[in-house]
Length: 244
Image (tube, rainbow, N blue to C red; front, side, top):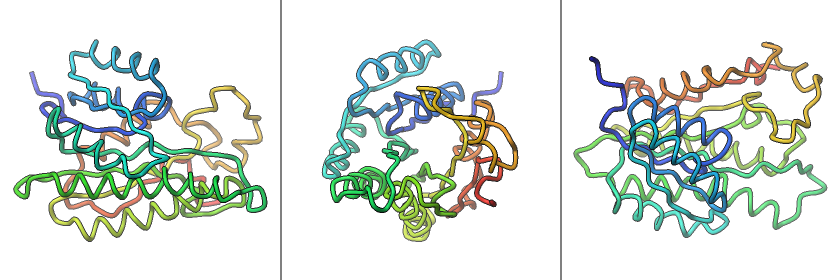
């Protein structure tokens, strides 16, 4: 029987307890990886997701950190490494608030930068420093189609994700050849939990539908297992939304 592609690997996923993060955690686990699952305040969701991962026969560790405070990033990497060395960092944790240019406060602005941009940098920095020099690793940053085709809604979120695109490409150069750094830019992947989306939401999406869960999982697994010669790339899983 052929081993699963991620057998023997450990993946740290930030915001891995809920929604997209949960799907990514389970996809990696089904592919054979052990999971270090970060969350902030989602205690029950983290426990539930961890149980699902454990039921797959994988080792799972839950770690908490509040990324409103980016200085917790290095400590999270150290705590994770103390549990087990890992080779993949997935920067998924983010906040996404429906703010325009004129409703954004300094607090809103700073929170989006802290969580969506500053913390991923310091997590990546700490990971690169901790990874032994004779080992290779991967960093995957979760992005958004808005980051490469800005619109007026979700203003500080869009700016923070655009910064994360630049960070992805800059780190790809800085950390080569030992660590690959790529981005996964999502569109209509998971409807809001409250169901508050009308049919008009899909009108500007060329594919005219939501992504299938399997499509997210397949794309993520490709990025986890793709050739190490691919770095600094942004893959869009958005049904073509970034083209309109």
